[in-house]
Image (cartoon, rainbow, N blue to C red; front, side):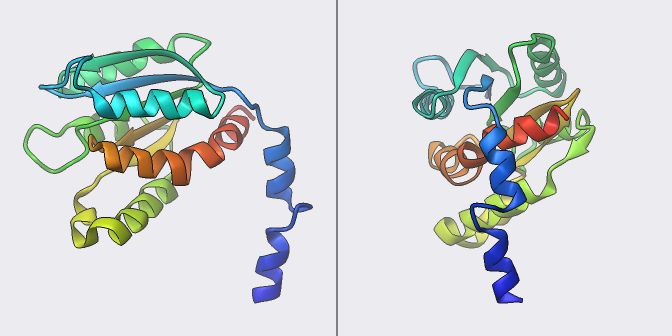
Amino acid sequence: MRKSYLMSLSPDSPTSEHKAQAPRSIGCFVVTVSDTRTEANDTSGRAIGELLSAAGHRVVGRAIVKDDPDLVRGAIERQLAHADVQVLITTGGTGITSRDSTYEAVVGMLQKRLDGFGELFRMLSYEQIGSAAMMSRACAGLVAGRIVVSLPGSEKAVRLAMEKLLLPELGHLVQQASR
């Protein structure tokens, strides 16, 4: 069993082939969901944009919307109407307080869910913060053939998700979603 797993990680594996054919520069839009963040103090949205740009992706825009499901859905729908937005990443509103509504807004829009994203994020987060990781409702999936990802509002959590999960797979995700 171990040998076959290692063989699947070889440079000749189907995943490696897919990644080699994946686009290198993706058009991304970042939405910060918060009742209190402004452009001046939106460290999580800024971190997402900086990490995307440093990895060679295009940040086609950023927005800050109040934590209201209708406003979140509207912001996502408006941006997905643009052909240059291949990935939309939200930050904030994924917790369990009465005001956290991003998860409900996003999951209600998803046509295909990427359950593994949230599972892996919580596993990685658990390694850093312990059992409080269970309160994260980070999620991802497809809406109209585009990748939509919802991250927590914490800059540390955003960096973890971007560096360990999203950036290594972004081109591959877009490639597979467009097939």
